[in-house]
Amino acid sequence: MPPTDHTGLEVLTYEECVERLENSQVGRLAFLADGEVQIFPVNYRWHDGSILFRTAPGTKLDAAHFKKVASFEIDGWDSVFQTGWSVVAKGLVKEIDPTEEMEGLGLRPWAGPGRDDWVRIRPDEVTGRKIS
Image (cartoon, rainbow, N blue to C red; front, side, top):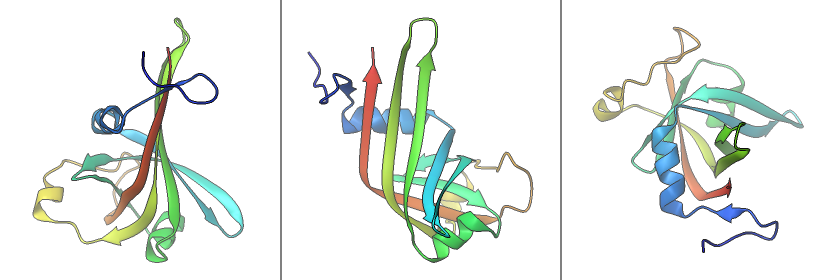
């Protein structure tokens, strides 16, 4: 029987969380800015133990410049069977220079051109829960 948390939800292993991060493309970035919690959807890639996304100048890039602590969340569900899962990664948001390998990942911002700045979250913590 898999481990459960205090509410009875199944706890995903780190490997199960990484598998979901590798196979998903869209998540939500959350961090504190100007005294309020900001949450933004971003398309991303999991690469070399990190979450990578591209953005343009603005709130997300400002957070990266100041290396703010952020949470990144992905999830999936089946409304018919009322099952689902959620993975949360926590770490610093940081602007980075892309490597040739990263350029080859095919990470293109869904929101359109002009999002040329690369951002990385190298998680300090990755956790997940599942409702089965």
